[in-house]
Image (tube, rainbow, N blue to C red):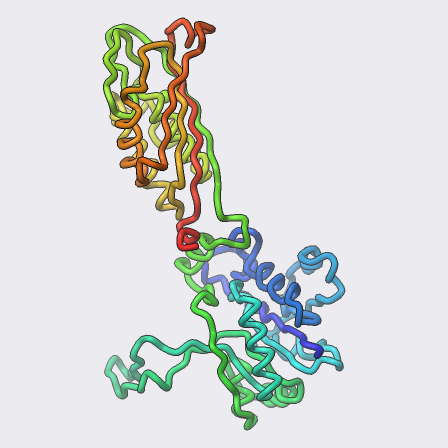
Amino acid sequence: MHVTAIIAAGGAGRRLGADVPKQLIDIGGGSMLQHTIRAFLTHPRVSDVVVALPPATEHGELAALAPDRANALQAVTGGARRQDSVANAFDRVPASSEIVLIHDAARPFVTAALIGRTIDAASAHGAAIAAMPSHDTVKRVERGVIRETIPRDTIYLAQTPQGFRRDVLAAAVALGRSGVDATDEAALAERAGFPVHVVEGEPGNVKITTEDDLRAARQRPNGRTRTGRVGTGYDLHRLVPGRPLMLAGIAIPNERGALGHSDADVLCHAATDAILGAAGLGDIGRHFPDTDPRWKDASSLVLLEQAAALVHDAGFEVGNLDVTVILEQPKIKDYVDAMRERLGAAIGVDASRVSVKGKTNEGVDAVGRGEAIAAHAIALIRSRADSSR
Ligand code: MG
């Protein structure tokens, strides 16, 4: 069976504040439109794709999305309304096509299973759309006053794909061209007298409309590219008499301590850079500059905690942290468990996900002579949207 997918990307909507139409905004691993096209072009039951683009959009890079199927993809210029874009695209649907799917470019998380269900229902019934039952009670409101409470079990929220037998969509498009306005093709098909069946949509098949939607979309795993990110950190401080030796917020008895603007806790500094680095958020100097009097003698464990909050706000959580501290003396092994507890508390993970190891430099170089202390750290972080997987 020949199935053609039309992707409606003709809108020039700039509601999301970007200087490009929203469907061209990057959501990680490509634009919304690229994700959407890929979902259909790689579907085993979809023969070809026609995408309706805003006027003056570059088409060139679209072919690169699926180089082995580049000739299965064509682009047309969209119209003023969604239905005009779909009508333009419909004119390019091959004559051999039996089922035509229509999908919003702004729903990039459509699954292969949902596409398959829609194809099945369209071929069985002539017209079918993905829709979700409403979990909220729906009120009809006029001038701020409720006029009616609509029984919830009769309310479905329309998604796409919407699928049609070719002759049904031809009738719907003709009705639209005769001057009937509609927000989707299912409405035109209904007006043309065809029963439109509902297939179960998916809660993840969201339409990206607001800034919040965009943020959430960027935190979602896109394929396998967002499942984990790593970062490294390194730090070194001079050891001088008369300073406390702070490691992971614990004062280690020693005649020398690390020199620095804050408490010079190399372990925390390396760990902070590792988690900031993993999230692409710069480094400790950018967030807590040593020219800022607020950080004079500050507890670096507190700085680590603040850095972890920044990483969390950027949509990530720490998976694990491993730190190597290099100092000639004293031995730190008796403090390691307490350090892991404190670091874990600061970054919001169980101590079992934190490792601290002590090394010497065998008497070699400044660290080996006891003139300095150094630390290396590596952290794995992952998108919080992934954590349920
Ligand atoms: Mg430092």
